[in-house]
Amino acid sequence: LGALDGFGPVAFGSTEDLENRRRDDRLARATPTAMGGHRSLSPINHVRYTLCAIGVGALVGCLVVSLGALITGLYTARVQFGLKWYEGAGDGLARVRWWHGLWRLVWIAAVYTAMAAALVAYVAPKAQGSGLPEVKGFLNGSRIPGLWRFRTFLIKFFAIALVIGAGLPVGREGAAVYLGACLAHAAWSHGNLWWQGREAATDPKNQRLFTTIGGAAGIAAAFGAPIGGVLYVFEEISSYWDERKTVLACLATAVAVMISRGFGFFAFGESAHFESLVVFRKRHSKVDGKRFTWLDLPFFVVVAIVGGLQAALVTRMMLWWTRTRAKWAQPGGWRFRRRARVAEAVALSIVISVVFYAICLLGYCKKKPQDHDDDENGVVDCPPTWAPSASGGRRLSGAVRHHRLYNCDKRGEHGEYNDLASLLLVGAEGAIKNLLTRDQDTPFRMRSLAIALPVYFLGFTSMAGTSLPMGTFVPNLLLGALAGRLLGSAFGDLVGRGLSGPGLYALMGAGAQLGGFTRVALTVTALMTEATGDVGAIAPLMLCCIIGAGVASVVTEPYDEVLLHMRRIPYLDDKDLDPECKRITAGGPCARGA
Image (tube, rainbow, N blue to C red; front, side, top):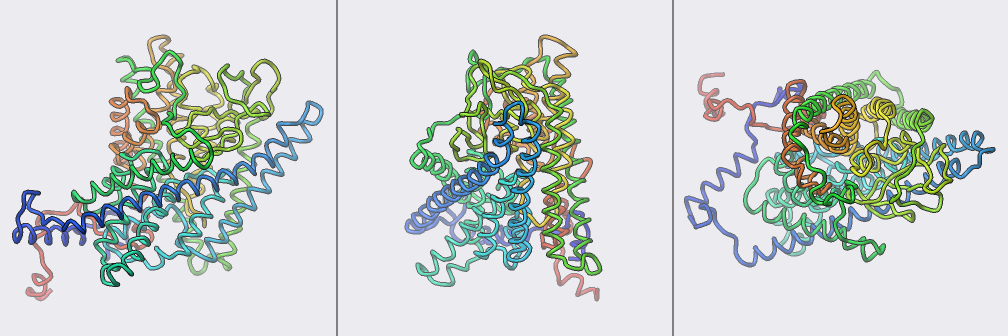
């Protein structure tokens, strides 16, 4: 256990993994069956587990819908209070209203952030961060006090909504995984408490089973990707996997995605049919998109290498910020730790809001495409969430364009939009939508992409270690898409005709960046394919994810695994276990007098 003090992998086999394998071996020898030698459940237990999985999927789907609706309301209030005040001004009042818009955005961002940071620092410190390392440690066999408390669940739910509503560069996927796992854990424990008694309710095996299922349903509902949700918990979170988990997780994720879309249809009048994250050209199929050419492949490899290096740099920067803030919180650091953490979060939100708002003055005004969707002010207000807004915003896999008017002219046949503001002031998911679009060859100038990339990189990495909940999936997708679109535009200018559009390069960059950050190439491929609907890009996308993960692995350790050790969460990993160590028992060293 002394290896937990360092940051390298712990060279032990997973206790839960070994325990389950030995139990299955004993059952297989005692009661062999046609199903691989495992003892089958009784019909009553089959029905009970199936109904529980369906119930978990339905509850998690409703939970993600509620979270999306809350984020939508907070984000829309911020946009209406700040940006619309400036964008609705005439030429004579534009300069005055720019300052008023800046003050309004900063004020509401500071209020949202102060509320979220205070709730985390004073009420539920376990709600800090994404929650993925803690869930991973629990599924590995560790008991983490306070992780599944209702207070932590409630604070995580409201705090992540406040942080995203404030416009800070974070995602909600990590929170969705934790919230889904916590809800499933509570549903199984409390449901069996009156059904079968306390012994069944506190059975660790079944608690971890349904915690895994709830986490898969959470990320599946957040991305609209049932297959990707199952693969994520299989590759990244769960320490032990069997056939029962596969069936129940697939069932729960499918129900969660259907419930989330069905709830949107009945509650908001939203169409529940699948829509792509990518806006394709009309002459191209929505499913196939614009297919890649063989000339693109070497350039895809370059984009994947850059994405992997960028993911490694993001990991190192986030770990540096986390370690630095951990030192400040130690004895001899900040005197008033909780107050200081709240003040730091508020100050950081003010800086990010000012930089994101002011730097958009360097953007260019471009004409909107003819088939754009506008609201009454000539711009699509896109909350970075699932739920619809009054102006037509949708979730990550929606099909509405995300443009910001900012300081451009809204008059004319179609009006204009500011390309840099359409990257920094529409939320992370709205910006990804713009970067992956295929129906415009040049919706952004290369200068705007080159400005947005380092600005968002610094803003996102500086959030690590703060007293705020945050997700890392969508910000990494945005950074990868920015780098991919920038490189794709440069390659197009260099080579000329024959290459695919920069939107496809943005997709490759997003996959490489997220694959490099999480090291789960198959999961990222499935998530991106289900979210975009671009089936024709599976082969190069998987190649880029694998290259990105490989490049990042050479440079640094995975972010969540390092956090496990930094937070002193016991985790026994058998990835680098020497086969000779599996034969060592506790009695061996004792017999030798060690």
